[in-house]
Length: 503
Image (cartoon, rainbow, N blue to C red; front, side, top):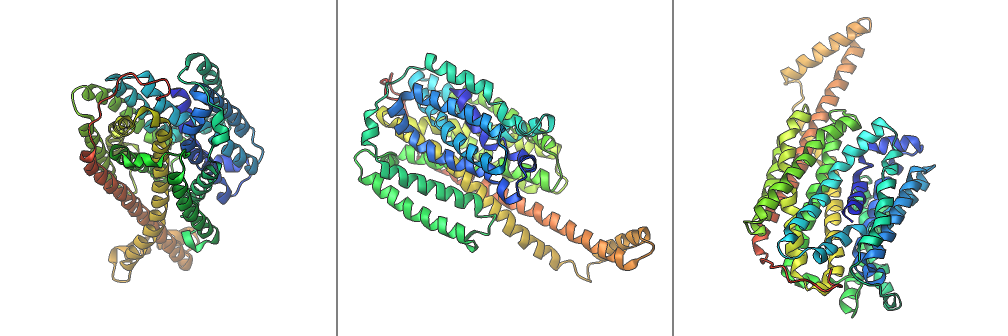
C-alpha cells in the first residue's frame, strides 16, 4: 500500500522537470503544457476527501485495488498520448483513480499498528509523503535525459500491477457497504467537486494570467467562493455528510490540519522553487537539477531514523516543534542565495530542509488523526490529506505571484541606481561596448546596444535572485508560525486495538 501511495505522490511532481520535453513531443504551447501538472492536481484534490466515503462503499481492499489498477492503466495511456488534449484527459483520469491510495494508507496504519508501533508507521508514511514529491523532479529529470519523457509513465506499470495483484490477497480490514450508494449526498459531492476544482484552477493558473485581470480566473474564483460556502452549509446540515467537517471541532485535528497545510506549503513550494531557480538562473538541465536537489531526499531518510530513535524518549509534540523550526531555519538559509549558487552551495540549506521533514509530518498524523474516535477516521483522513495538497497548491500559487511581482519591484529598484553617476556601470558599458564593437568592424553604435542589452540581462537576473530569496523567506515565516502552534496540541495516547471498521 505504501508503494501505491508513493507512486501517486511521485506523479504529482515527476513531470516538473520534463514539461518542456513533453511539450515538444506533443507539439504543445507553453500555456497548454502546464495543464499536464494542473489536471492531475485538480483531479487528485477532488478525490482525496471522497476517499473516506468510497472506502465505506467498496472496502479498503477493493478501493485500493481499483485505485491501483486504474492508476496503472491510465499511466500507460499517458505514455501513449498522441497530443496535448489526450494527455490532459489521461492525466485527469490518473489523478482521479490514483488519489484514493494516499489517505487510505494513513487510515490503514491505524488498524495495523497500535501503541508505540504507531510512531514507526507514522514515521515511514510521513517520510514517503514528504520525500515522494521531492524525488519527483529528480527521477523525472534522469528518466527524461536518459531515455524519453514517456518512460516517466511507463515506470509505473510494473509496481502498479504488482500492487493491484497483491492488495486483494494481503489486505482484509473491512467489508463493503453498497447501500451507501443509495444514501449518498450527491449534491454535497457535486458542490465539493466544483468548489475544489475551481479553487485549484485559480491557484494553479492565477499567477500565469495575472490573477483577477483575467476573466476566466475571476469567474472560477466566484464559482469557488459560492460553491465553497454552499458545500460547508450542506455538510453541516446533513446527517451523513460526504466529508466530516465537524471533525474540526476537535482541537488536535484542527491544528493537525493547519500544520499539515503548512508542511504542504513548504514541501511542494520548495520543490517548485529550487528547480525553477536552477533552470532559469543557472541554466541547469533536468538531470543536473535532479542531482542538485537529491541531497534533500537523502537527508530525509537520515531524519527518519533519527525521528524513530528520538520518538521513543520524547513527546512527539516537541519533536514536531523542533522539526517545523528547523525546516523554517533551512528555508531562511536560502534567503542568502546568489546567482552563482549551485549544487555545493545548496547542499546544506537542502539538508536543513530535508532532515526535519519527517519531524514535521509524522507527529501531525498521530496527534491529529489519533485524537479522533476510530469510527470518524475514514472521513477525517481524506480531509487531513487534502489540507497538505491544498497547502502545496496555495504555496506554489503564492510563490509564483511573489516571483512575478517582486522581480519587477527589485528590477525597478536596481535600475534606479543604474544612472550616469554610477561609475562602475559606466565602466562596464564602456568595456563591453568596445569589445563588441571590435568584433563588428568598429561599429560603436552596435557595441553600445549590445552592452545595454547585457546590462539589462544582468539586472533582471539579480532581480530574479532577490525575488527567490523573498519567496523562501515567506515560507520560512509560515513554519515559524507553525512551530508556535504546536504547544496548543494535546498529547495523544494511542487506544487499544481498534475495531475492523476503525481505520
